[in-house]
Length: 585
Image 1 (cartoon, rainbow, N blue to C red):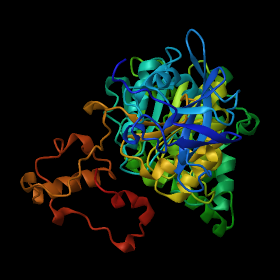
Image 2: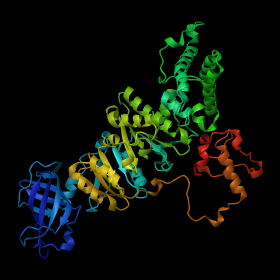
Image 3: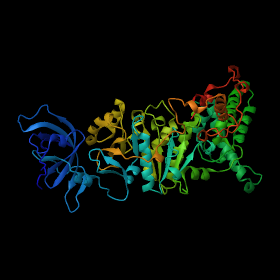
Image 4: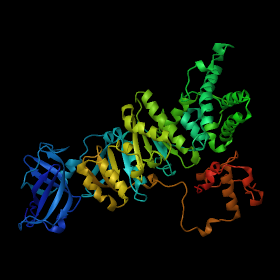
């Protein structure tokens, strides 16, 4: 065509080594350097025989140039895959025909990029566009991403939560029958999924205490601290017997007045069958009454006191409501938690910020464990995606930090969940603090900006050699920019997440302003209303839920003079009042 610019080779191959090659950049290119922009991160194509090898520039230098005037610079490239010729050219990962010295190298065309990133089937989601060419859509393979787990990594403020909302909304569109369970640590995803999600919090969750296994119930009773060995021995002995007594109550019509020996029933401390607290305390009290040594009774008395203290704490109502009534509600609980049937709400958002700090780890452990066990015993007939936000909190790389059973439950999903239709999505801002074994099971990674060197080092160990050089871009990524690696994407790719509609943007339940509003009306009545909600969270009185404002607060707030003062002499355990340390949402 008259007036058009014929693009000659950008350069030629001057060395090949394993999965990488070195390219000499030619001085006599007919395309202006301002248009070539052969910089780090750009894709190039190498014509080698019948196929076209796709590579990415990872380094550009003008040092140690060959002794010739032919080249103005050299570039290191990683060989990623090749485009095979045919009626419909097809891209495949890996290289079967390696380039030879002198093979021509050119910047990849938009048409070749579309061939690489063309959706291969209906099971693809549109997540954004390529950074190199905004006209090319970036697709992710849902099946590969889910079945082999995925992780979203990024520092605070780079758009990580928005990216998670985008991915999950697209997954729900592509897989409307997939159930999704999201652990929402900061209560920011409640409105992101509209009518497709059910939001759970301490006010509407029922998670009976008897669903907790031995380690989990001990963690609850001892407030996250190590248990007293003597008390644990007693508890381990009486819990199976309390379960047996409850079973006998249920079968009393068939058994008549004859009662079997509780020890012969065969329950363990971890068998998920109901028992009643009144039976548990009665068994402990019975053993205490048989002791002649008064000093030995202290152990039993302390254990009973712990159980009753937690039972009477209104913050634990989601666990201990109807604790003495009984009833095997396990089927109802699992159906409610994991959306079986979905009833047009295939997603569960579990808001954790409202739970007592001492019990959050145990609650997460119970939910993770039940998700895996249900998949295991149902043979994976109803697939579920389990998404864990702030994953480093629950599966820390340091075995001395966090709650062991929670790490074990998440690890089981990571290692074996795909066999039973339980898939894992991890979100974290500190990947270096996350258990390396667990993150290594995630075969699709979406990395946003990470400035910490330890985080980058962990990622270098988690991705293939061909993609490792891309990680040098991680500290300089902009907002919404992502490096995507692994099975879910065609190539290690630098892309930009697409815009998320306003109603799908994550936001905290409370909007915190750095400059207080003059018209906010922060008078004594306002302070009194806050105190009413504050006290209501730790008493048996109903308090307005945080997201509903103050509409349910009585017209007259209690004055400060009417508030009972808590004196140190009352012997209150400060750890039981950790709610007071939390900021008001």
